[in-house]
Image (cartoon, rainbow, N blue to C red; front, side):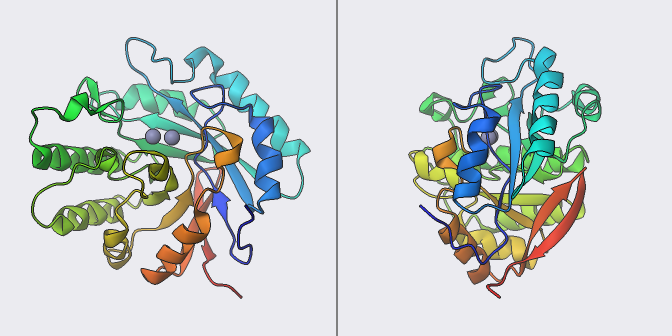
Length: 269
Ligand SMILES: [Zn+2]
Ligand SMILES: [Zn+2]
């Protein structure tokens, strides 16, 4: 797979052995260059739950992770390397999250909602059994908005992850997307097209491609990410995702350095 390389493509959502990925950061670099990415960012999970989840980086390993990526950054040419984290949002733990991320020289922080209360929404269909799907969607979208409002994060991951098992709300979900997009805009935070939904029962991207237009109309900045858990998944389905962005009327994508956001044009010239 070689990407259409006339667009400035970045992949900021990747996982290594430090969390639940299957590859060391170094393993990703060769593949990223091979497929023509202009930037690769590492974003291992940080999940600050009481019981240390095994898909999260151990907090004691954060410095090692950070130093390792910084060393790669210095050594590698031909591609920009970024240091990030995908951090689970838990209401009430903002200070703890803030302390953890401010201690590191991060280029960006991805805010992520995998949990509603104690339960995770993407570790099996059980969560959805005997629950009202409309309520789950409303709860999930509200939690993403709430995470965005904390100001802790640079962009929100997979904004409608609750689609993972193909459950859909009844009625027209557009107002829900509209409200979420407006909340992201108000919090001045970006969102991602996450192509990893293609590997899930959903077999599509997050967010729902039908509502990308809504994010554009509300003026929410966007980037395209693979959420790769192995080097071979880097840049998966990116040509399609970038085409969707253009079709939805987006003209630029976001890039991050030292938690500063800037834009790259989304044209072929
Ligand atoms: Zn995630
Ligand atoms: Zn992820």
